[in-house]
Image (tube, rainbow, N blue to C red; front, side, top):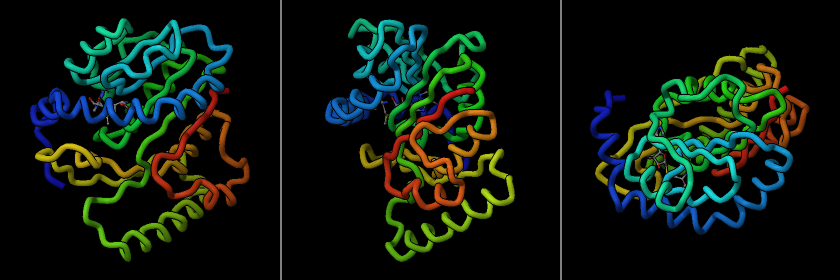
Length: 239
Ligand SMILES: C[S@@+](CC[C@H](N)C(=O)[O-])C[C@H]1O[C@@H](n2cnc3c(N)ncnc32)[C@H](O)[C@@H]1O
């Protein structure tokens, strides 16, 4: 894994073509996102935070909405839609007080973050007790061009790792794989840098006293039931 020049990343996310492509997907997915989000956000009156808000397609979800995104261009577009947004690299501590947020959500962004652990730690810090975290991402994303047989082996290894981690109690640390991005292309997650298993993210939050809102409570069943399909939801509530 080569080191990535932060300037290359910054430039990538400022491109109009990238932002338009992400917006296209967001608009397409919006009805499905709303159906789930509205349900979980009911009764949460205070700040609602979106990580990687892009051009702000989801900004109308809540009157106390705040979007964070590393791209200045995307943040400007969110503001032009009339929603609150701040340019922020979400691997850095958030510009927010501890326990000041009622809900955090994110779409198609976690896989683009070089190290998601500081991000999850910050989510935990700013979230008030009873607050919810809702994340949809390309979990367990494979390098572009990975052959089918290799993907099948990876899947088996993943379930084995889930079982081992679940039984050994080591799931309080989050391991993930770095993958090589291709910043010369736009679309199809060419810019993905982290392959994260949402089962392990569930466990990471569970170890911090969170309740799983959309996964079976049985740790062994969960190794299989949290499926390997892309774009599954992670929904947890702070205890
Ligand atoms: C695939 S787009 C998804 C945008 C939006 N959530 C949606 O679904 O349309 C990924 C977004 O993550 C943002 N992003 C990437 N790295 C980031 C970081 N370190 N901090 C904050 N935002 C980041 C990008 O600027 C981009 O807007």
